[in-house]
Length: 80
Image (tube, rainbow, N blue to C red; front, side, top):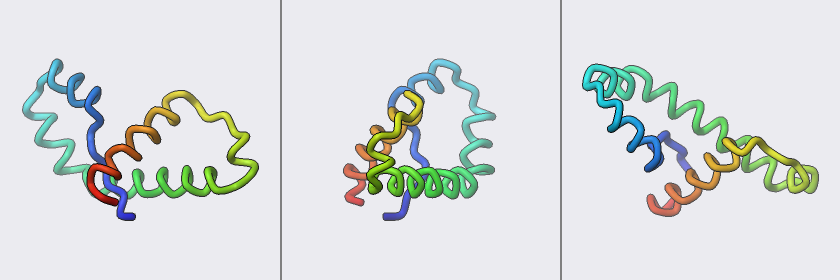
């Protein structure tokens, strides 16, 4: 599954409320490769954790749990 970085709906709303065209154009263009790489890494680590008995008992930070939940939804919507 090719993981890529996509903004979550709440992130899009936050960005829209702080609209800054310069940052909007620059961040995605300049950092997209690095964001995709880090997203793939995080996704792989979380998949590894999920597939182990020890991982099933692991309590992850709320932010990580929410990111993983949203990422899985986006993967399903992209058909991955």
